[in-house]
Length: 179
Image (tube, rainbow, N blue to C red; front, side, top):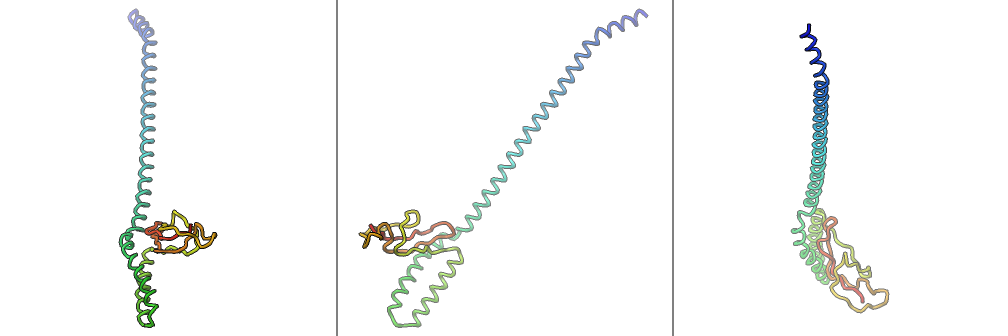
């Protein structure tokens, strides 16, 4: 009995120490769980940011591809612009002659070329004598004295037509402005 009593006393003395160890282990477990939860949250944030970056990348590259497709033939269309100019000059000279068949033939060829280029997205600038000069849209070749005060700062003559492909200007109209 004395032995049982001694063991009981020892257990009672050790009880607070055991209780402290158990509470420390629980605290350690909680802190480990909290640490792991924090790490999971950090990883979730990283994942969401990476996902958002990827979505932005996809959107940006899709937009760039669309722009590339829109302007893919820009070089060829630029090379065809002098041919259009030659047709315009030819029409002026052909109208001086009275050969109606020649005029009709050149108009047909010119019309086919223009229709084909229009179907590829080429648009002609609508620039007329008397329009206000805009440096963002027009290219001034020279300035001449204006015939009247109302022609100052306005287009006096169109030297070369301008063209755009979609929203992009591929050749600015060359104009003479009044001074």
